[in-house]
Length: 118
Image (cartoon, rainbow, N blue to C red; front, side):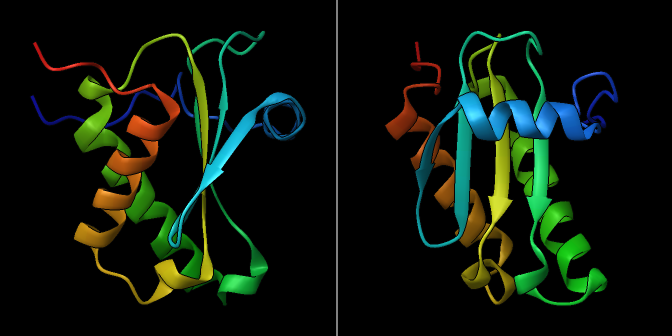
């Protein structure tokens, strides 16, 4: 069941990121800023970003890898047909996987995109 994220659902074009930044609702905590767009032209996409303030390319890529893995492990609990953009924050540089995972789950529940356990 553990498999890679499909390339079809990962945001890769600037147009997609700009659309989400402009039209999405955002929530944040210490480690992650989560932008969520409910109905838009890019149906069910996920994006990962880390700004230059976080450090060099190695550090930024590390943060994005952690965010990708957190989403991959929890995607079965996230509702379909929404676009999510996850942006790493400065505190995420020194955080471990479990801190960021808890942060993601908490933000999803706050945003109302977490599927209710049956």
